[in-house]
Length: 177
Image (cartoon, rainbow, N blue to C red; front, side, top):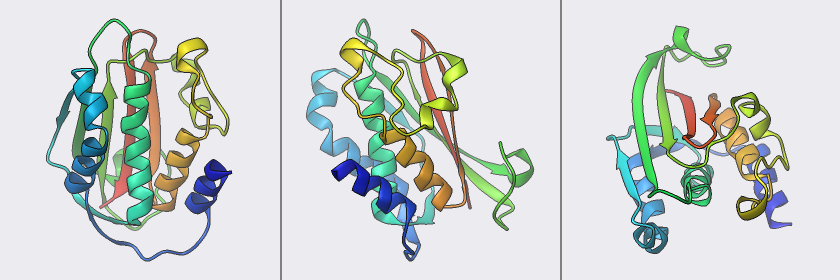
């Protein structure tokens, strides 16, 4: 029930956008996961992230889900290396149709060296209740990435995934500047 409420909160309602310092938000989330990150000797590298406009509780959930997935799907034979990168891109370089008047976008990339996934699932991974891994990696509900996609869409952006089995996964978020 809690998960359905989370998905519902990501899909309905009108909320006021406010400035969000993504550096502060990522640091908060990393602090919440500090014990597990330390235990696994994880390495997290991040660029200086932008301040963007959005709904704070949705961004918190978005970033927590992406960072949490990197930890959940860590490759069992190596230490987690998570990179959080950012760059500005022009609207004409977006992966989909422009739905905002913005001419420039922030591209946020979450890149890990985890177990990855088959490239053919790069769109299906965002479907509700979709889980790509069995056994030790199947503890999720299959709703987290669907929530992430909905949150990004609520903010006029796109979420794209790519992966390679045994190499890792990459999630790119495109948000209006």
